[in-house]
Image (cartoon, rainbow, N blue to C red; front, side, top):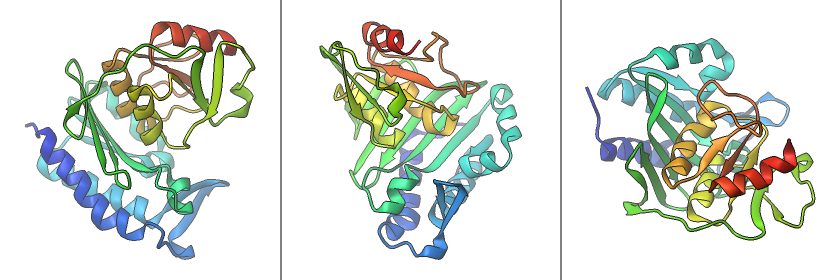
Length: 252
């Protein structure tokens, strides 16, 4: 059983409009929680995760991995590499931004077959953009094909981790958006050449990693390991091989 891209996009938009947008800049203190110091989850995260997961199960089934559920029970991820069909959901990527009233947040969804990401969606509700990628067919934003040119000189590298910002005449460091649902598209658009992450949880990275690869980029750890759903160490996202080598060389 399969489900077409537009149906999934509509499901994401519907949940976003009813559950997320209605709470944007309207959260009450009792609707905001911390999984650990500085790591927020809201009632909107939990409801959006539940509703989107339930809708996917109704339409097509498969294994559903939700960020908040997997955070509570990491063993849930063990089923993904062996499942014929799996869905990995981040109901609100950039929850800290969402809590603070920043427009830089989004919904991320990845479809995996036997552990390989085959389709990915990123919905940026306050920017009004739906990003989609399918393995082997490229990337679209609002239905328009996305391509990017060569990397800049000096290389534009973004991160939120200050320790990564090693001074170099060939790298221009900038602050990332604290939101993978925004940072990955910026690489696809060519606004940034590299994004360096300290953590690589699959719900944060699978859709965007597919998109970067589909525009010709690479997604690897600083040691050269190709990113996949089981990889949880920090990693780089580069627009091309040269940009990756430039920044990875600084961080090794």
